Image 1: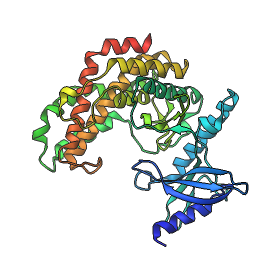
Image 2 (image 1 turned 45 degrees about the vertical axis):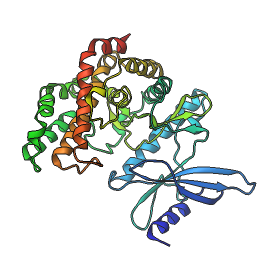
Image 3 (image 1 turned 90 degrees about the vertical axis):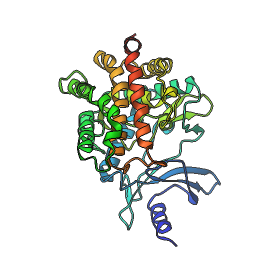
Image 4 (image 1 turned 180 degrees about the vertical axis):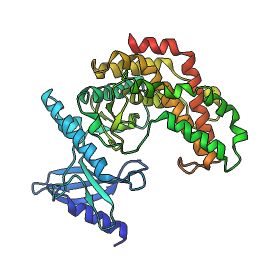
Length: 367
């Protein structure tokens, strides 16, 4: 038995699945954690599935804090859903405890493992093939905000410190440019000039938080369509998944990251910038769905700042791609030279498009 197989066996033995384990195969397309679909069978022949994951130690250095966040949030969501007459087993993840009653297991190599019951009859889609699917994800993430509006965000750990600290992201870019270890700065001056011309923008949301205009909330911080399970029959988003980055943050950032990801039709590394265009209609569709799901949970100030969330998450992502390009492409994996620079350029093109649509974006957010 290989070392990897031995660790998997240890993890399988650490949990009571309520039946005999009859299979465990790699599952999904995630690039961070190792994910397995575990199949079990009880004495009557009933089959049940679970998701078993080895938490990436490279991405998450404190699995105890990460799992404390997830356990607290999912238990709270289960109560809220049940009180509303919903089905917690389908509408939120739930953590299966180990045989010792803990929320994760540590194997002999120090790797952390966790288990969720599998939510059947759902789809996990990589892209919004229709506006209706984009709206479904919007309602799901808005509902996530509504259900967690009274959860004490300050009690959560920061699983990735300063993740959406746009001021710090700008400081990192400036440091990379000053060092210029690969002599790439001369070729990216237009991108640097674009970003530095918006230096004041990098403080807009954080200053609003410091001034008390924007409240600290429980945020997901990775609000892509593939982090919402879509009900196979109804086509509605029923459960938000991938909660590793749930931590204190700003609701406008969750909104904005979805817009950055979904309100355009281009590849993230598109080299022909004429094909990169911000889709105002998709923005309006997502905004309507998000606010419908949020059900009045957001403050008037949060509504006013929603366009800033879209712009800043896109600008921040562009800065991160450019920083990595200058430093030698050590964070974002690349398949070709210059790919991170192309990724940066698409983000900055979307920022410029948003600025041209700013009045319409603002009107959609407060209408």
